[in-house]
Image (cartoon, rainbow, N blue to C red):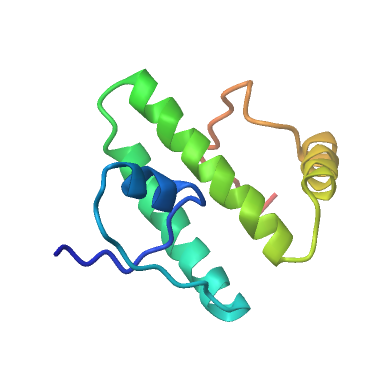
Length: 109
């Protein structure tokens, strides 16, 4: 029996059950949940970096977004609050659409 010991999406137990396989799960406490979400975000980002196509890349970005949504709640905020913070930073510093690449800065000026 393979051992996974990892956070999975909420409906994965039903998916496994539908295959007729036996499995065990448990509910994480708040600290474990936060820790496992961070691990999951790293896992999903690594999968993004190894994706072989735009389709795979987008799927991994969607997975990362789902984890980020859960982390927002863990940090005591809402998605709307996170979006407002993102907008505020974009207004003050811009986004990344213009592809600006900083080469150096002369600190003596």
